[in-house]
Amino acid sequence: MNIDHLEAFMYVVHLKSIHKAANALFLSQPTVTARIKTLERELSTELFSREGRGLILTEQGRAFIPFAEQIIQTYKEGKKQMKERNEQEEIVIGANVITSQYFIPFALPLWKKRNPDVRFKFVSGTNDMLLEKLLHKQVDLAFIRNLSHDDLQKREALDNSVKLVVYPGHPLLQQQDVTVSRLAKEPIVFFECGAFDWNRVHKLFEVEKVEPKIEFQVDHLEVAKSIIKSQCAIGFLPYLCIKKELDNGELLEVDVSHLIEIKQHVLLAYTKKDIVMSPIWDDIDASLKAFQTIDRDFLSKQ
Image (tube, rainbow, N blue to C red):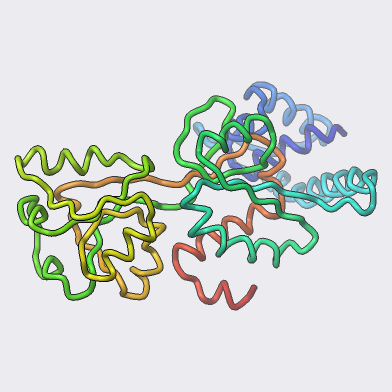
């Protein structure tokens, strides 16, 4: 029984799609299909049934999962034993600046607590730098903005949409359907770093033929945030940097979705196929949910 055939089976089970499994394994769909067909012949049973375009585990396939997992795990443990005994498993994680500052300090201690035998190496950098490290297999996974590349596997991880925030008690909180002309009367702090498209904010005022009252122009999120908290201005800021203040009421969001929406996400990207099957994958998912929902029950169990 070929370990590659078992691995193909488990990827399809885990990702619920031959197409996704093929992408994760860097194989063609026919190759993955052929490996599963070979495994089915060896077992003399059907592991999946098709309904339309869907792929459904048969009862025999479901029953075979623990055996496949055990064989793969035994194989991995055998490989691990071949390494030097004092060599600790290492996972290299990268993140862009905003994720490094606001999510990683929350998540990294949780990952380590759940995986005490794993050595975590963390790298912070620009999105372009992290893409380069991913492609050269220098990091296992990275939190980056949307960068397209054929060799990159990615999925949405964190919402980092841009929001208009003000301090508690600000008059805009009492208004419905705030107009651009009304916004132009407020002192504004502009955060400029290239992380999102500020041209869209400028265009908002330009279309209405009004000049925004830009009192402060800064290149540091904490500076911009402090100016708003000190009641000197209002501003458009990415969600990750203001999440804590929104949660505790230090800052409040003004809904301007009828005027402008700047949606952006931090993506979790990887190239190494084994990372999806790593035990830490589920812990990363759990930490993302806990961070976005402030799941105190999750934190108390760690």
